Length: 194
Image (cartoon, rainbow, N blue to C red; front, top):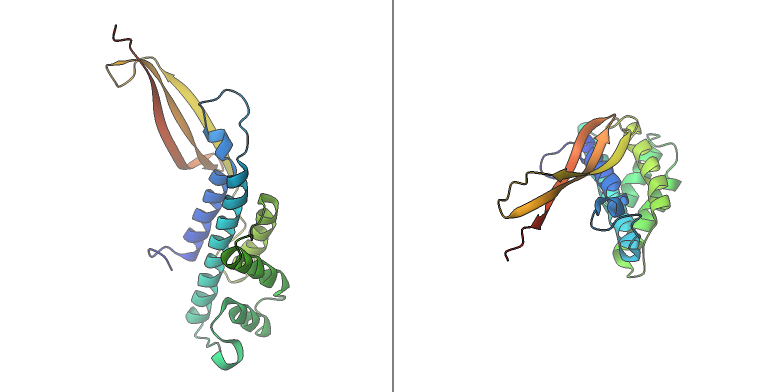
């Protein structure tokens, strides 16, 4: 595991990252009106997030096996995620591994093929499948209800003496109306020196 975070914390952080990343066009306040989606980010963001999501599954399976005192026979299953999934299917912990293997295969294509990628829609479906697997293992419950928000407020009295006025830009994610992640920056219109 990473930085001593639990599987549930890693998964929740990933879901928050997905919500922030999916809404990146709404975080830009420099242009009024609808923001165009960047085709490079549209290809890269869901792909990178899928790689991270599968890494959480891999860590979860390893932790599940260790915490239950189980031992995956290396001669039969090896040490790969493929073998770990097959072991849990054979032990009747996962009723079917086909969807997990499909997701693992997509992750492998993304990681090893320069043309590999996925879409936001496919990522959403895969996140649902992975959440179900993590729930089966007892690490998570139903996915949280996350909502992206963005706001821009005028600062009539900016915190810089050389500014006429400014804007405070805040965007982030709420879970059940409770703030769980924010990014903030300020923009200033400076006084004329002449």
